[in-house]
Image 1: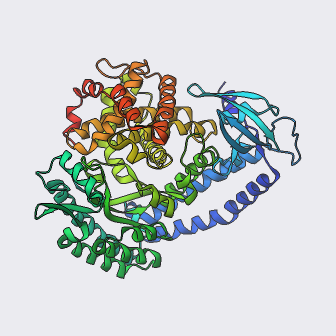
Image 2: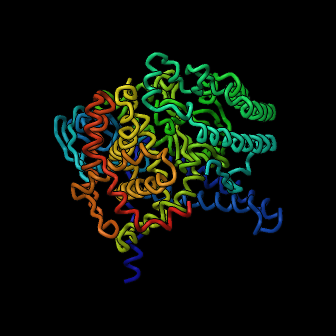
Image 3: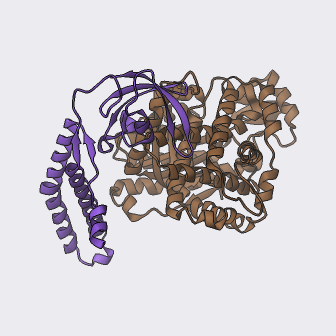
Length: 163
Length: 450
């Protein structure tokens, strides 16, 4: 039973990436594993030489950086294991991952591209397919009105254009 | 307290150069020094003591110069006139100006040095605008500092006179980058749909957000434990130069520990309260002030202050909460913040309004905030979104959000084109401080610790 649970918790979730996103993730992973790990190891080694580790801020800072990098490596490895590459050319009849969509949300206009969660950056108009808005829009056609709902927020948005 | 000093963690200042540390130390002294001028302003007021509000308003009609925000009204030979602050308080301002100039001489960052020189000069010649422009254009400085006559909440007669304040701190680059990212996500919608809800002149010129580990703060923001502020308050200046939102992270941490968290633990039902961790609520407090300041900055409308007069400030404050939280729906649906975080934002919003009430007991400058807050709290109570018995029972979040959206719409309308009469009627109908009085009986232990 324990084994089954373990296997379940380690199940890889599919992650949608553009070809550029996939390439960026691979480059970043290689950089972190080959260069950054060695760089941090050297920083830790140097900080140890300053002596007393209990009052050594350089050592604490390097250890913290190492933990962040190892987390990022694990995250990227998981992402790449479950990566599904989005076709560069996609349908314009309905919204798919990779579509750029222009919508009217309760009278407010907005435009963004729907991407996988790894590449999502709403500040740069890239919305995750797993966000409430992304989920509501997938499969919608031009002219469709879809309802975006969370337990607190409810509003309708109309698809004006799909690119 | 009109001057507060905060200890900054070693990791937040260990990267500063020897020169920067010296600059920081000198500027901290000036922040303390300026609190004395603020204290004098509180004591003297902005005009002769024996002058009534009506007499003053009558005098302004024949001499509009009396409204000047940066000057003291004095009586000479039976006539009212003005003396600019930089002359009236010269005895105190000159040594502060000299200290800032000395700090400038040690600074190795060119743009920060030039700014400090202009800021020093502004205290003795009253040219605050040039210093403001240079402040917005500082590049690559870890230290941030400002000191000037700024907030006008203490002028209850003309609503224009500014009080001196200042802060110095270290910019937290990582949090600042994150805040900029969220701001862009909000503005990407706001810029497009300006005809509906927003005044977009300010974002067009650029609004920057800074999260800062402030080490010293004085004047109004220290007095009321402000979590952050936006600069400038004058719409024309913002249109010309842009604007800046500063979150006082160290003061936020202090206020959270001393006021917000104890209020949260006191007013909410324990089973409900146990759903939200202390860390999550602390993080949410940062979100709340960020949304509040953006809400205020995005809703500056031409002539609103003159049109609504004494009702402008309460309506602006209520709208900062309502529109700020209303805008957060974009962040939720786009996946930047979670549903739980939105709930926590509404909880902190309620806690914050109660904390304003406690601070108001000690400082009348909070009056506008309290009137505005009561508009919101009463709407939640009268529409069944919140219930108060001994404390607050389980809140109905979707109902609160609905009320927030509805209030944001009404308040924005008033700011955008409402008349004085509409604003007066709205406040008369919706503002009632009794709701805070009902909650405050259990909070005396918190009030005494601030």
